[in-house]
Amino acid sequence: MKGTTKMYLDNGATTQIDSRVLGAMFPVFTEFFGNASSLYSCGTQTKQYLEHLRSKLAGFINAQSEEIIFTSGGTEANNLALKGIAFANKGRGNHIIVSAIEHDCILNTCRWLETQGFYITYLPVDHNGFVDYEKLSRFINPKTILVSVMHANNEIGTIQPIAKIGKLCQERNVYFHTDACQSFGKVPIDVVAQHVSLMTVNAHKIYGPKGVGCLYVNKGVNITPLFHGGGQEFGLRSTTENLAGIAGFVKAAELCMNELETEPKRLLALRNKLISELQSRFEGFYINGPVLHRLPGNLNFAISGLEGETIKILLFLDEKGIAVSAGSACSNNDTTKSASHVLQAIGRDQFEARGAIRIGLGRFNTEDEIDHFIESFISIVKKLKPIFS
View 1 (tube, rainbow, N blue to C red):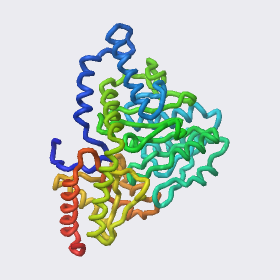
View 2: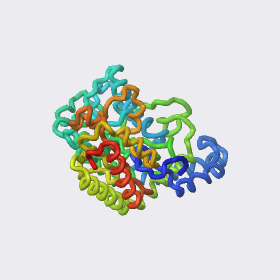
View 3: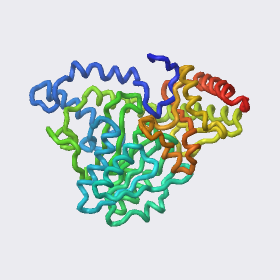
View 4: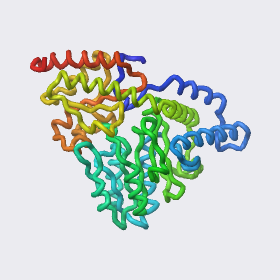
């Protein structure tokens, strides 16, 4: 890896691309360079390869090929899901329900929809980040057209019971969308068994390229496109497809599916070691989010009395070549520098919500790296706060 980073522990923000993914992408640039919408042979060959990739990806989530709409990533797919459903179904109703801990691209889309005459209910969560199912049931009304609850949270790793939520929505004749960018490839997903109407997935969280993702749209869903043009992607996403990116995306997904039984167990063992070591060393150590029903590679923690030193700790770790974060990478673009909305939603005050450290373990992390992180972290804390030594 180029640059000063020697140990990358922020796989919740993005992941290093796997060399096997690059190997799947390079031939596409020369072998399938034709436009998939063209009628001559190199165009039709490209189209056939695109549909092969689409079918393969669909199989990983028990979907049908024509239900996979390729996009430029998670943000576009989430925008298409919410805006596309809102405007296609406004004759039925103008009410949308989302959880209070959704990704910024969901929440900011909802704030914009509020200016367009839609009414948004922000569903509260408990101290571990799980949505209040009973309140969800009460909030759904005849004007509700969509419920959107992310499968796994990007900051605290909470895995929601989407099958239960999806069944409720299905029974109440309401579309259910889930942002699965963090969970896809890490936990099993079956859009049929889990009653999902729409689902967002992207490549760069699973060791694939940036700038590519997809929206699963169940065949019975009434949705309108954001882009208008040549009618690609079944008329829902007009633009020439990024075939090399899609090839990398599908290869990355395939690798994750092949390791779905073993890799989560390995990451969980690394995370448990990290928790055990930090708990034994720091009396004020606490975890944000659940211990169970959590992404295996996610740890969001803080130490009482050290919350005000988080940025300094991250910078000192960076000087040692160790990359961790204080929360969502996208939140770093917030010019107001407000505290984490996720941590505040689970009951942390603004001070605590600014003082968390997020570690995202991934495929290329080792036990030796965990040992080195712990040693480095302890030495930095001693420098900043001798009282902890």
